[in-house]
Length: 298
Image (cartoon, rainbow, N blue to C red):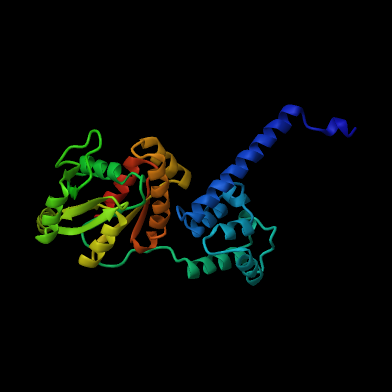
């Protein structure tokens, strides 16, 4: 009789494959939290929306240790303080447990919120390979009411890039002159290699004409613009997942292995700065992300 109750071999193989796939999805979600691609609150929301999903199936101790700065000792103290059993899964938390866990997360890692009285100067930044240039180009091509600023850079053009359209490609001497004459709103050295800067005059002219201006720049530049124009609207572009960010960086084939590794280290630092921004937009679809950014112009 015991033998007759065993599931068919094909069912057991399929179940094993599903279990492996579920573990991989949970591992990917933990990477997303640890690299700050998604906030802990977002993962908790996903678990609550679908308790049977990989997010909902994740045990609370796994979830907590995926959060940067939480080790096993701190994890156990949090579980005790919130009266959550170590065997509990995120999707199986009671209403009180969910509320108290969310309140704890909000106190320790608050999610960004828009500041009041934002201007029509939109600043788009994000980690390497997230697709800032592609999204900005879509805004330029499909939202002509928005002026896309063209940056100056000392790096050589990539295949297909046009001087004056994608960037102003200049040498170091010319870039020095732009700095000396105060012609740049911001400038920075990116990836310890090339310099980038935003010409000030076209931006001032567009804003004076009542247009919205979009700057597509790196994190250093965004911080400089925030200091120079505190009312600028800061938008952080996120990848759908950490694994997708790695795939995009490898897939574009413009850097060697050493450079890719360095850029990914930088990306972790950049992702940690997203709470400095007013809005976060996920680049899971270029057209959708671009339209969402354009809508922020009000």
